[in-house]
Length: 240
Length: 235
Image 1 (cartoon, rainbow over the protein chains, first blue to last red):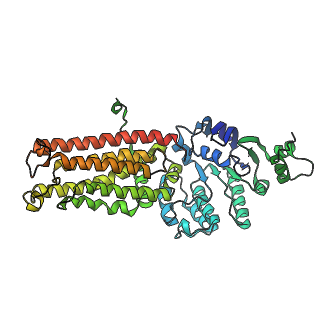
Image 2 (cartoon, chains in turn green, orange):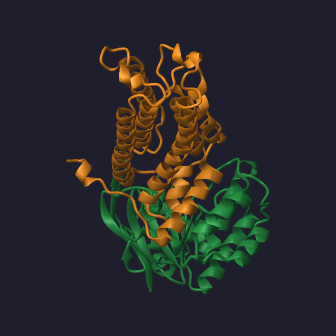
Image 3 (tube, rainbow over the protein chains, first blue to last red):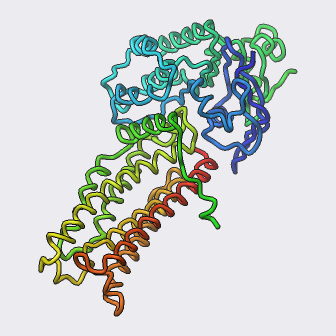
């Protein structure tokens, strides 16, 4: 079942255009959003989080348009925007104590579980965290309020291989609970390991949005890995 | 005609809880301690031989610092990502700003009441070329705060980033208004603006209420514009 839909999303910048981006995200599935740096991943995700104002197109969650329903939708959505530093000098505990008030569904058990799993110290401030730990702090908040869909911008960037593996396992666990996980990455092995669906963006346009198997079937040559296929496609060598 | 289109922000019970949560966020995470530090500058009404409206200006300086601190902490994007409507982010900022301003105005009112009664005949205040602490001065403090809400806070929400330009424009306008307020009572026929004690109390009350109305109108106008601007910009 489609939990989130992006239809005809367009955003024009002087030197870049996000052009007619469309795809959907299903519940109980992990969707990897892949593309090289500057392909339009963050612009798309920012539009999905209502942080930027698209020139055209529509974004819907749970059958409702984001415009006009953002409060209700954001309560049911978790997000992480990578290594952004929120309130760098405040203690994590103080930030969380404020954030939890905004969610009726805040789950203290989940919060404690992920705090321990991510080895985060509540008494530390974000400015004292490494880049990888900042990502984990963002994820901690996203995972602690029983979100039905997670929109994550580069959640694995800056993480060590062990933490990355742990995180991908967490995604699989959440998927099994029916959560829709949508994460952007430029690390193809992340997609290879856990994604069910692939949305591939290049130069502001969606090249492919399908299941991983359908993607491989349509684009891969015999014996080619997903990484080889994507590298070849990025060079402009398409094989329909 | 524009005034007709102003929407007065009001909320149901859920809205009150939401706004109290936003206020907690403003106070505990976003605000600079300087915003609170400058509140007692409302008592500058007691300083003899000092432009009385500068107290109101210092309070806005503290709020400006708070916006700078919040910007460095990515506060606006953080707030926009919370499960709140974008206009609630704007409303939260305006309520916080008005809260600081009103706290300071209460101190100014206390100080002015003392100067209008117990200290009404004090020579140190009587022999003063500058403006006297009276209800007109309080009304003008409300005007300064209204201008801050319109020019600085409203200007900030055009980009949710640039604070320097709207603050410089506000400083220029604020000091022109302070200069005018300080000068007016020297113009023949306008001496009643500088009334001592309860002299010309009818006129003084009207001037205070006018200042309050200007504050409310400028703030509502700024809030409505800021909601529209903030909805359009990219964060």
